[in-house]
Length: 344
Image (tube, rainbow, N blue to C red; front, top):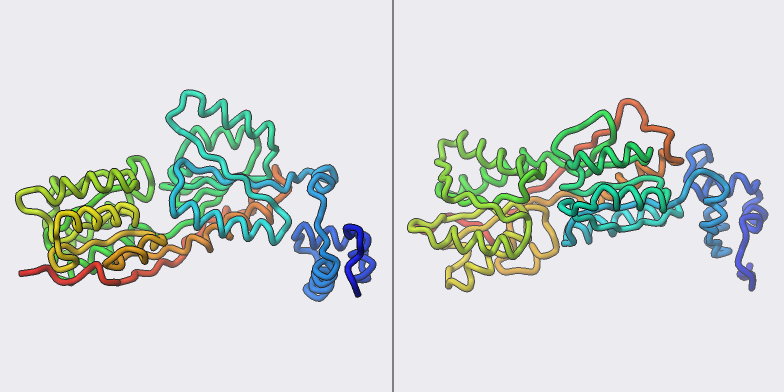
């Protein structure tokens, strides 16, 4: 069968699949009340006819807007990977993903968020850290009856689902790796203050150091805000102390890459004179030399799950299932070339 010259309609798909138009609508809207066999037949018809649902018509037909917001504070590799996963899952169900960057320090922050929610009628919002811990944005979303899914928050609440990994345990394992190589003087670069992952990664580092009777030197703890430039400034200070560390734990890969860049400029031999670890397994971890030892968290899977939670619980205002979903996903410690035993 050849494709029609005019755009296919929902009724065309129904006729080809030998089902009702309502069944086609259920498949397009990813509703769970369709058998697998019928869903497959409808999806084949959609593909054959190259049927594209009309977003405006779908919005007018019910309460859904088929729009999901992805709210973040700063761009970076984490956002890029997360966006890709969430956008793919949205496309599968005919949804659209809208990225919005917010400056939490702006005096207009709350008003701007409220205005957007009134204008766009989003079916839900995914909050990336540190916005996932922000009380103001959480309250604004609840006041507007817009459901949200929080990524890697500090605390679980009764208001919205959350998805993340065990940052504390991952940091302990990464620290244990450095200690197993013989490192005792280890520098640490923290992320952004007030960020749940910042606190958990440092807590994991500190607890593992104490558990193995390794000293924690306060002069070797810096704050890099999860940013390359700040991480580079931290590395400069750490590597210019009278007795520099033999290893540095940076709380994300961007800051770890900054440490490696500074170390190269200073003429240090990596990893024999300085071991470096990061966190996230962002693309930069495999682009620098030496390749970065890091923790891989399943960012794409987290993104897909977050979008799926909103899609499966649309239309908005219906509330979340009980008990509230809080999902902790597995992580992986990746040992690469940036770590070795310290030079004696």
